[in-house]
Image (cartoon, rainbow, N blue to C red):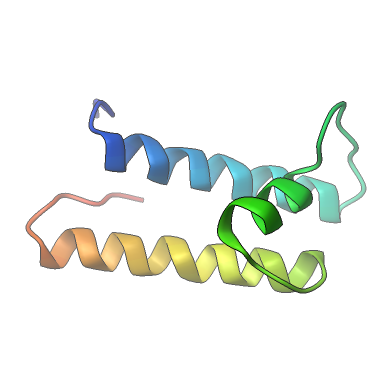
Length: 76
């Protein structure tokens, strides 16, 4: 699968952010800004880490559903 369209790149980035946040919830730390702070700032999400993860998961689901309706091929 080639990810070269802007909406595909953004969906991939959102999925990576979701994975990073899962690791943060488990206790892993990273240098620089946390995935939690990035998600809150970029998407205007509020709540604790678990609530933010739930909202990102829902956002990914909605984007994939919209892509399928529009005739795209959302995978994963």
